[in-house]
Image 1 (cartoon, helix red, strand yellow):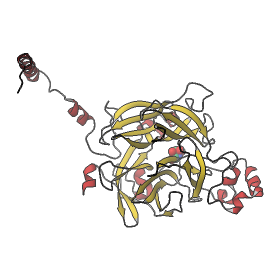
Image 2 (tube, rainbow, N blue to C red; image 1 turned 60 degrees about the vertical axis):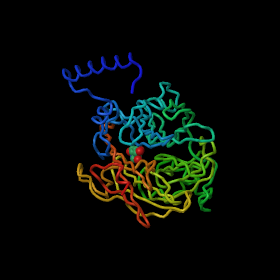
Image 3 (cartoon, rainbow, N blue to C red; image 1 turned 120 degrees about the vertical axis):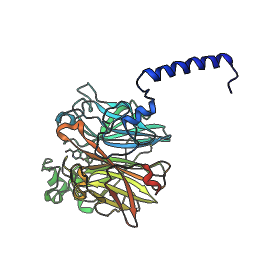
Image 4 (cartoon, rainbow, N blue to C red; image 1 turned 90 degrees about the horizontal axis):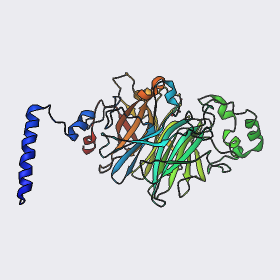
Length: 402
Ligand code: DGJ
């Protein structure tokens, strides 16, 4: 087989050395075995999930981008303790071919040391998501941004851009969506100057969680000029290349869905209000067989609540609620569907090369030691009119072959 004699001699020398090594040394760990030891090719919801360095993956409130056959998982890099709930490092990114074994690609977007920057260390960066713009050939990251020292009052959206999926991303700016634009489905009374003035006199004294007060005021109108609030968020690119920003607005009481501009760097001014006063957070939007679906949560801070789901024929609505898609119980904490196994949704994405295969990602938050937050990834199944996310202790992609 080998024609070259000196190559053959070399081969014999190497084979002899290798045999000596095998007989005297510890078993050799080939790289495939190393990575198998680090993380088996299965999903084990709620467990420590190690990357290629043997470190628990640090990408909370994350999202998955599929680009050229590789998945990229972006998420909040958390540090230990309660301080980990603020951005001390930035947005972390990992890459994978099989969705179970992830390579640490480092920090995609770093916080700034400049106290004048919106993204100065100590601000809040949550739920980063990345989409690829085929026209500009740029990777565009959006995230929920809260300015340092202002709690959750700013309710802004940050935007960053990169030429490569893993970054580094360059921070561009932060905005409040759709300043000076009314939603397509605005009600006449929301444009009423008297109700806008009455609401503005409240000086933003609205809680970020469910109260009946919000419905008695005109929060949408009061933010018309300065731009709408945007907290928990996600991005979605439709088959026609148009991209959308989905975000909890109006002090978290109502979900907005907004078209982005062609370059994905701004809102286009076309948007709808959805699920008014249903207090939906953690929206994860996806498309299947021409229909749009949302999995989301209620609004209870870091504490879990019952998941929601909804369906629509058009991404801008109208949306129809379907109920809680969760089934089963997480044996690690005994939490069932009424508390989403202890988790909160963050993304639902299709699996490459598998038919009708979608994975729902949830976070198990640990606000007192943020770095220890865990991940629950589960397959989504579909019924005639609805979807289901059933708890599994351990599973792999073969479930999609059945
Ligand atoms: C729930 C949100 O979904 C999280 O992203 C985070 O903002 C927490 N609230 C903060 O309490």
